[in-house]
Image 1 (cartoon, rainbow, N blue to C red):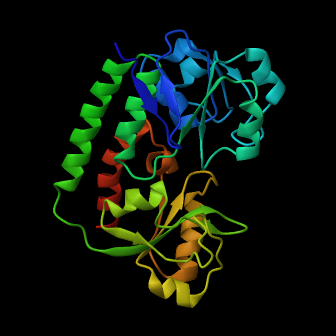
Image 2: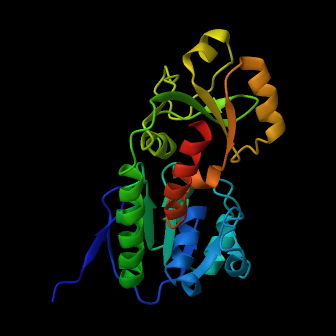
Length: 266
């Protein structure tokens, strides 16, 4: 009988492991692992892995997504490390790969990629049935969103940072989420950057139908939104960054949230 293999985002093949010791450096995938019933396999997580709160509190912290404590991870003796191309730095991952036998690399770019992600995680760690149930629920929600009448086309600027101001390009997961509404992000990346910096100008404001201020990674507030709206004279909406950018199990709620966002801007 052929042993099933599961292929990650960079083409690495992984086989099933029933007794894995997992360190997750990706907050949204830490949540996915827990929701698939795999919390007891998690031996380490980042300080940004905050969901589900009651479960992750008992799991050792190993630093942040980028400032990782290499020695602490070594002491935890994981069999598997879960990383993401956008969130984790390759030199750090390469160091960890010297003593962690299996590095699972993820890189969801569009909502549908959540289906492959859930099947990958469920397949490697023996939670196929839970992953299949999640995929069925996610597929229904995405189909329901796409069945809605088309929303008015809009050009928006989705801000993730201030001082310097930073946004997202169309080829990011957030850009793909907005595309589900028929909205496009303002094309500001002249150098191909997926997270370009920018400066406010009247010329930029004139291109926009609305500005979206994310609650993460920079914690924009209603005060920021009110001040910017007065400055540029365009609608500015505070949005839930987790719903827009967390793939994995939170993406199910994220697709529902897109309906709310659509209603906010009419």
